[in-house]
Image 1 (cartoon, protein in one colour):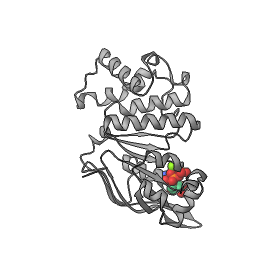
Image 2 (cartoon, helix red, strand yellow):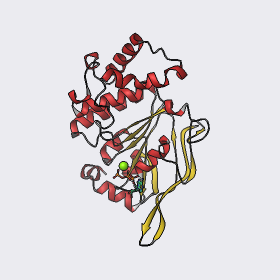
Image 3 (cartoon, helix red, strand yellow):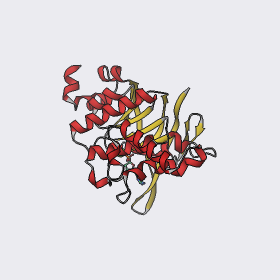
Length: 263
Ligand SMILES: Nc1ncnc2c1ncn2[C@@H]1O[C@H](COP(=O)(O)OP(=O)(O)OP(=O)(O)O)[C@@H](O)[C@H]1O
Ligand SMILES: [Mg+2]
C-alpha cells in the first residue's frame, strides 16, 4: 500500500477582483501516491502550487476538497495525533526553523519532550542528551554542538540540525520543501547525499520539492510535474527525464543544459 495517498485535492483562496470576490484555485484536482521507501520529486515553476500541496500533506493547510491519507489515516481527520510523529518537514530557510534562543540540545530534543509521554520515550536529561548526540552523529555533526546556539553554525550545518530534529521522533516520511535552495551548490550537494544515506539507512519516504532538475533526478524514484495548480505529468525519474511527454516538462528539462545534453 502507498504510504501517502493524495486524492483529487484542490485548494482555492478567495481573491478580490475589483468589487467581486472570486475563487482562485492554486491547486486543482491533484492526485498521486507515494510508496513506502520511495522519493517523489515535485517540480514546476514558481507559484505552481508545490508548497501548497506540501502544506496540505503536513496538515498545515486544509484542502478545499479531496482527501489526503498517510498510512491510511486521513490528514485533518479524527485520528491525526500519531501523524505528527510519522511525518516531519524540512523547509528552505535553515535559520528560520531554529529558535535562536535555544541551544542545539533543546532544539533537537524538543519533539521528544513534546511527544515523549504519548510515545513512551524516556525523557530524562541523560536519555535526551544521548538521543541528541546520536542524532547529531547521524547528520554528520558531533556532540560538541549540543551546548551551542544556531547562530554559531553555517547554513549547511543549520540544515543538518533541522534534519536531526526532523528525525528525532523516528518518522517514516519527510516533506522536503526546497531543503537546499538557500545553500551554496556544493553544500547543498552534501545535504542531498546525507538525505539519500539517511533514506537508505532508515527506509524513509520523501516528498522532495526542488527547482533543480539534476538534484530531483538524482534523488527521486518518480517525478511529478505541476503547472498552474495542476499535475501535468508523473512518471519514473529516468524515463520522465529521457522521454518527457508534456511540452511543459520538456521546457523544464531544456532549462537545465547538462540534462538536455545527456538526452
Ligand atoms: N495563504 C494564501 N493566500 C492566498 N494565496 C496563496 C496563499 N498561499 C499560497 N497562495 C498562492 O498559491 C499559489 C501557489 O503557491 P505555492 O507557494 O504553493 O507555490 P510554489 O509552487 O511552492 O512556488 P515556489 O516554487 O515559488 O515556492 C501562488 O500563486 C500563491 O500566491
Ligand atoms: Mg514553494
